Length: 378
Image (cartoon, rainbow, N blue to C red; front, side, top):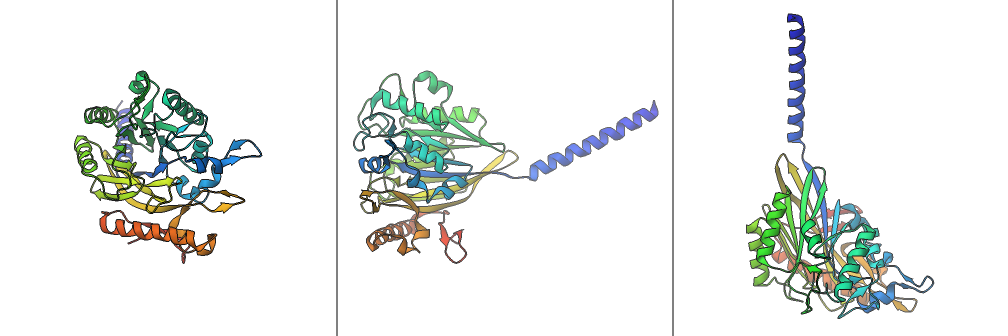
C-alpha cells in the first residue's frame, strides 16, 4: 500500500509540474490578430459602366482591386464600408445607389472579410434594397453588420463578433441618418442614438469580448477636420466602454489618433469612387493588431497606407484601379499621362501634410523602392 501511495504521489507531483509549466507558457505567449479597415466603397454610374462585360452581359470588378489585393488580403480581418445597396435594377449611382452583386464579389476576392452596411445610402432602394443586399452578402458568406431584415434578426445578432486565436472582437456599426428616407418596416438601420449605442456596448461586454470597435458613419462631407459632434461622440463611446472608433462619410481623410488603449480614425476617405475633386480621389488603409496576454488586450503596430483611384481611358472607356499610392509615386511611367501622376502626387502631399500635423502615434506604411519592401516610417 505504501509503495502504491508513493507512486501515486510521484505521478501527481509530475502532473502538477506539467500543468504549472503549461500555465506559465500560456501566460507568456502573446496572441495577435491583425485588422485592416477600409473607407467608402461607392458605385457611381461610371464605375458601373466600367465593370460591365459585354461579352458575358455581366459585371466584373476584380481588376479594380488587383493592385491592392496583397495588402487587402494580408490581414486576418479586412473590413470596409459598403456605401451602396446591391442587386436592385436598374443599377445606378448618385443619388440612389445600387450596384451589381459583382462589386461585393470583387471586394471578397481581393481580401475583404466583412462589410458594414449602415450609412446614409442604406435606404436608397427601400426595403428591397436592404434585404437584397443582405441576401447577396449572406450568399457570398461575407460577414456584415449595421442593417437587419427585422427586429428578430437584430435581437439575435446585434453585433458582429470576429474571433481568432482566442481573441474576440465585437464590431458595431451606426449612421447619422439615411438622407431623410424613412427606414422601411420591418427592416432596421442602426442610427446614431447614444442610448442604443450604450445598450449595444453593454451587450458586447456580456459576450466576453476583448475589444469593442465601432464603425460610425458621421461628420461633415468634404471637411478635413473632425467636427465637434464627431469628437464629442468619440469621447462618449470611449467612456461607455468602446475601444476603437473608425469613421466614414466625409469622403476625405481626417486624422488618426492612438492614446494608450484608445484609438480613433475620424474618416478613412474614399476607397473607390468616381469623385475626382481634390482630397476626394483617395483614401487610407488602416492597419493595426490587437494583442492579448492572459486577460489583458491592447492595440499595437498601428499604421496607415495611402491609396489613390486611377481612372485612365482604355479601349474607349474609363477604367478604375485602386493603387497603393506610395509605390506608384516612384513609377511615373506607369501612368498614361503626367496629369494623372501629378493628381496622385497632390493627394499624397495633401494627406501627408494633414497627417504629419495631426496624427498621433500612427505612422505611414510606405513602399521602399530600394529594399522592395513595405516599411513603417520612423
